[in-house]
Amino acid sequence: MTKPLNKVFIASRGEIAVRIIRACRDAGIQTVQAYSTADSETSAVHMADESICIGGPKPSDSYLNATALIDAARHSGADAVHPGYGFLSENADFAQAVEAAGLVYIGPQPEIIRMMGDKVKARQCAQEAGVPVSMGSPDTIESDEQAIDIANRIGYPVLIKAAAGGGGRGMRVARNEAELKDNIGRAIKEAETAFGSGAVYIEKFLERIRHIEVQIFGDGNEVIHLGDRDCSIQRRHQKLLEEGPASVLDPETREHIRNAARQLGQSLGYRSAGTVEFIVDPRTREFYFIEMNTRIQVEHPVTELLTSTDLVAMQLAIAAGERLSLKQDDVKLRGHAIEVRINAEDPNKAFIPRAGTITQFHMPSGPGVRVDTHVYPGYDLPTNYDSLLAKLIVWGKDRNQAIARLRRALCEVHIEGVTTNVKFHQRLLAEADFLNNDTYTQFVKEQMYSKHPMRNLL
Image (cartoon, rainbow, N blue to C red; front, side, top):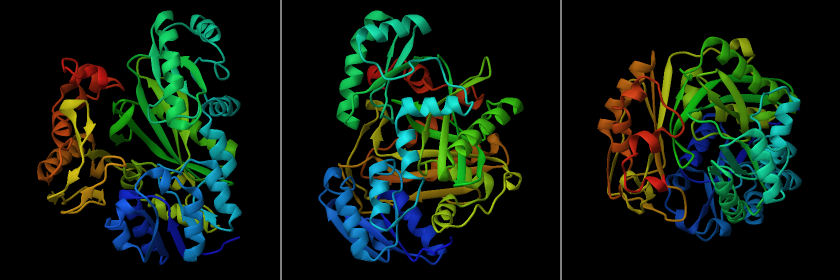
């Protein structure tokens, strides 16, 4: 049943909050921005129709405080909550509490968030849906002996991963039994600290693979895909550049991987935006499911430029009870798009985040250029949150034109007051292997920083 949304409470911050406000404004929906005391002067607070302070600067006191967020949402008279990305955006208990409070949760069903948030359960669901997964443990690891037995069976190297994890935390590579014994304890501790759960599992570690993801969207009945993205340029398992379509895929593999993602979404009865992530071996053309992100992605603008869609607007429509306005045959991809994350961090010192006051901030424009940001001159960058300043996205008729436009756009970026990774991106665009589309997930560490004194921290 369709029930139009009148007021949306935004339980996130930064550029995604600004993005949600704009989508709501386009749809004639009022917005309420949640903010911490550290974020009282952010762009989202100034842009929203209303704003409510929910606590102190520590995430645990504000953006991770589910009770404070829901109380504020109800007090504001909002009828829906958008979690953005990060913080509680993939927290099933939060989604369930939002619905229990009589509010609409703008995202997938809580039970699906919970299922996909458990990486072991997610692998099992993928297998049941006929989606290939890499060799690994069928469940979480209970002892060193069990881990050694599994590693001997599937062969080294192996990857230890947090079952409740993401973003590269709680993840360790072991190339032999000694490294496995040493790293499994470290992975468990990292997982406990980051996610409150020390559960880990093991899967086969493949060398020189690509990280490919497929954007899906569902209304609880029908699921479609909106193409793929290549997210192989990473540091510490976290993405720096995303592009689409993934040029490394041949037509047959592309069709198979897109259909596999859609198949998984369909088997779940998925609702809203989701991203199904795979690793791909370019040499064998084999691909394997690794996880599903049950939220809007940082890199969603790549898909929007390729498909001429507004994914956040689609989220709002589905949350209001509408059916998908697109059929799979309606989805047409055009050209090539690339996104780079402009962060306040020092690439020459292991990408360590840098805080400070933004004294100058000028971003590019022109044909084929889009910028998503929450930053302005005079903005004090908080130390409590991530270092993302802006997302610079370009579109071209093909990959070469997109790269040329990205080069031009990066030359126009002018930021003072904090160290950024702009020069890193410029250096990346000069790398012959990147231009030849011959990269992999460890490319930044092994090729660009192989002689860097801080390489072990990358």
